[in-house]
Image (cartoon, helix red, strand yellow):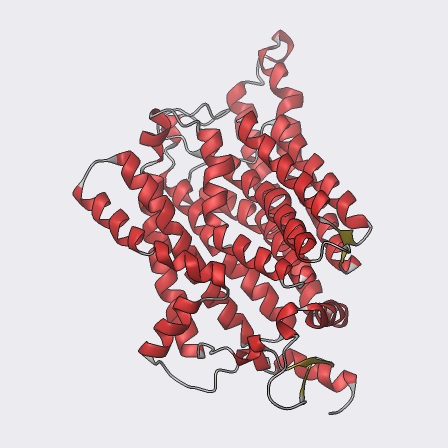
Length: 445
């Protein structure tokens, strides 16, 4: 079996046993069967929404019923995002463990990245930039709300539901998790919040100076231009920070993350039934029982890539349809901030949230926490800065000038979550409080 060091070396290059399908190429019947089964019973049930994909596409090209098109495309996004998440999960199984988790998290954010890019492409600067008052063609307020909404949805709603699921399953004891997940995650989120705060603080401090007689040359247009430049510089710095985080996760932290994953492998409720024979599977320096999960049919590498391609096509098409209906929906009375802060983050993260909650229910709390905190880190350090740079390249000024109230809410949420994670234990009460905190967002907007 070799030494632990040898297993760790193999960890960098070998394929996980869970990813071995025992097949090669593309087999349509098995492909459809495995995709329909998805990663869990809940994810499998989501596939019942696939007819809405057809309905949304037909309605978009055949009618002008904007509200119906928005509603059907909104529901259709859930199975499409679920397919992308499952395909990313299957692809990640072929990779080393830590790299696999990072890849899976990245695929989970593809929907969000596409959404932000489609929104910035559809944005019309002539519609009014500035403070973002919902003028026609101005999608900046929705993008900004979606950025913060995505982070808050993961930290409050998804993490809270994970705590509730784990607490209900093991109601007689608190769920324990590894310190590295909370320490690294909370630290990076605070750094990201600090970066996102800079343009907003700069704007709030100087906006009164634009009307002062002593600063007649410091106009609002100049301030807005300065905010855009500061946002662009901040975005570059945040993306560099994200690159350092990936470097740390994929190199120096391998042994640490191996320990975290090992802890979850032994707690996984799906590992309690071994296959025929007492053999153990050794991987990455630790052992675990050959579980039911490892016996499930897997996609081949080719099938995983096909599933990813199909899912991305549907996601892009549905998001274009969805974004195209935003203005009629806002005109119908739905506030643009509520649309960006609540509705869009919920649909774009639905599949990933289902996966995280299922993992928490099975006792894989560390991976569940990573699937809550990891996407929040990626949104703050990469996705949000990326849309600023894309807007820069397209000549559509996009800034990170959020409302101070929203930035304060983000910082408070990070501090609350960090406080709950500090003792390395969770229970259903803490989870319920996080969900209630998210519920207050729906009443505020």
